[in-house]
Image (tube, rainbow, N blue to C red; front, side):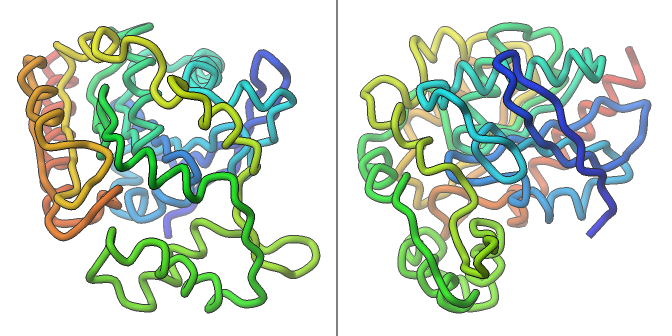
Length: 291
């Protein structure tokens, strides 16, 4: 895994937030990676393995995840707050152009960032999420978010992850499940393996309407002139095929890539996702040179 620095910034409500900073070329905009609802910066380790050096990778942990502090008010665990937190980081680092890689919740935050400042986005990857979220996917997510699990060994955790996600990744073997468990869980001070997020993130998520924020299609339209890759898992119950097609049709420069035999969400290491990302980044690099 490429070297990175653990760095921190502070939100406007004084929550200490964490990101991994992988160095890369300074003549290119950095790639800002944002994970899903219950996930964290470790989800982008393989992405960083492939792209760091050529591209600076900034993998953030939203409040309540990974190395970031928990929110003082659990009702701030909403996309608009996450977007405001990220904007504070971009301002602190003096970043006026970046590429966003947003998985699930991270994709919703990407759309909100675009709505606030579309001129800063040099490109965007929306990983298995859009302005409309399928009811089946929301129902499934509600069955597990905010429910604490404690395991004595990593193998126990891996088997639990497999039991909950076998339909999402039908081709995974035990090594894949073990790797996923080590991204999802952490070792606590008592030597037990626990989920690496604040269970209170579920509180606003359970309130209808808080999953994606208001009028997401209007916000999405801010991406119209931004080179955008939409990645969809063929088995996804969150991003429907019709919604994905509608997203492509509304943008001037968008590509839809479907990852076979994967549900919500692709890991962005699948061949279809890799080639789509490489096409997008080549376009961003070319535009940077010609600008």
